[in-house]
Amino acid sequence: MIHIEIDSSSGFCFGVTTAIQKAEEELAKGNTLYCLGDIVHNGKEVERLHARGLITINHEQLKQLHDVKVLLRAHGEPPETYETARRNNIEIIDATCPVVLQLQRRIKKQYDANPEAQIVIFGKNGHAEVLGLVGQTHSKAIVMEKLEDVRLLDFGRDIYLYSQTTKNLDEFRRIIDYIQSHISPDATFRSFDTICRQVANRMPNIASFAARHDIIIFVSGRKSSNGKVLFNTCKSVNPNSYMIEGPGEIDSSWIEGVTSVGICGATSTPKWLMEQCRDSILERIKAAEHP
Image 1 (cartoon, one colour):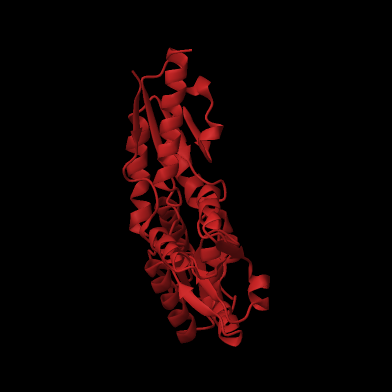
Image 2 (cartoon, one colour):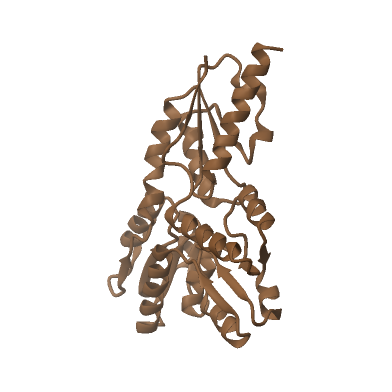
């Protein structure tokens, strides 16, 4: 008999859970609710909430709306979004993650105190959270995606380094070490570890989970940057790891001859979707035993 385990530490982080709760509460009142961008980087969960009435819009569409309610998701938004809402009499339901909100305030405070310094954000260019962080600096912050991007920096000027909340802690530390060893003695360098521990701690947890099973089914939306990081962690520990968006992508050949299957996912993966994947595997096993 195959043993199937769903990783108890996988699934929505606190920020995503809160955003979805706020959306569901508003939709339950029968109100029209818009969401600026996908509420979570998971297509299946977005579809579920669309079916309940949530309407996803982009920034251009936001500018055309007046006198409505708009939910801001956990990733956060730049100041211009709030200004558009104020101008168009839009009621904001702000579901920005508290960890992200605190980071935005810290970056704004640092920028206001020393606008000539280099504010550097270790993060993914174009990512919703990063856009919100860069917006605190009138778009002057430098975004570094990887260690090689240190070439963008002027080591003769002050550098204040922050991180997108869901980035890899080890890579962040390598960037800190490089800057520390190259910064001019006349310039100030300060780094701030702003990586969310609820997310960072998932990497060692998911690595030990992946090592316990014959195969790993990693459930995640392909847009999720956190999903890519966690899946690569699984794959490095267990080569028999497969990333899927839903149960329809499971290949029955993956489970032939195995005794244990681990199912896990990103901070944007709903528990119900991992449970659907488990149930799909159980149905396939049953069908194979009783053709």
